[in-house]
Image (tube, rainbow, N blue to C red; front, side, top):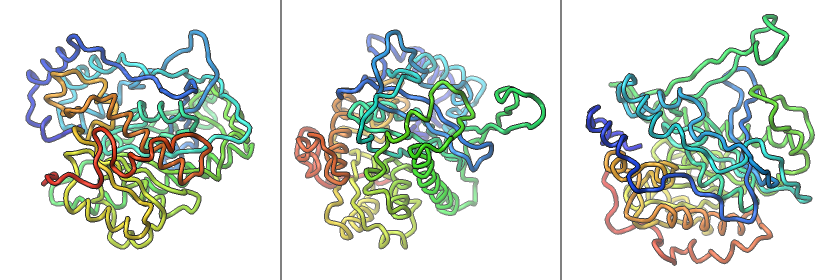
Length: 409
């Protein structure tokens, strides 16, 4: 979200925007356009902050009357969003809940995995600052509908607006569920006098480590190792045995998650490439750039990037001529999040969730460019190369590199 605009909005202004957000618009998340139905499940592993928490999107079998999960899974995330945008919890949280709380993700909750002999390629997805595991559901659903597994992490470095883990209280109950106690991890704000780099650089390191651990966990699951999901037993993780193609793995993320993807690419050999959506390059240290030798696709929005950030992207391109930089015209930083589909016109004026470009077209360009890039570098046996022109900045609403007038933020 755009915090600068929100900080100027009082309760009356934001309330009016939230209450009048719908109008004649049809608000909701789009279905995937690929040939596969999509299922999802939440997985939490471990009983402390060093465990992992993610939503897994996957191709599934059709299911009559399948349950669709809520987009905001818990009220606490509305509280976290209020904290992140630095507005009063008392009035902002219920308004956010009313506005977004009834939206559902168009997938089959805990749907049965569609088997595939060769296994599915894997994407580890990293969210942006102040987000959480469901905020990029439109992108994740589209990628899964095209035959990819997507592990959308919820980071525990205090960059999520809110997240939690479940502590086990041994001896209190024979029931595992009854013996779990939630501990919430709040968003960490940079305090006055602190240098932001000294906060964000350790965070991006933790985030990249979580991406690597996510890959290792998926390797364990795919090999048939028993892994306990402490949240529920609605989806049998053993169904993933021999269903993940661990020779075809990429890392992807938005904003802070884009920087995370780049660092994770440098840390883990099994990541073949990275897709960085409007990457926030600031948290990455200069020493990293010489270590990133594998290809990165930068899909930028028109208004977010600075000349300094573009220069850093070009430094990475100088290391690998398969690294690409494109910009989607008419888009803003939030265009690559679900808020672009769920915020109406009035709310958009306050939150700046959309640019001039139609959100559905923006999603198409983003995912098609990513799929074309993944086809090449993961050696996918698909027809995604029909969109390869996008990687050169050729096509509707896309240009190579950056526009002449770029952000001065």
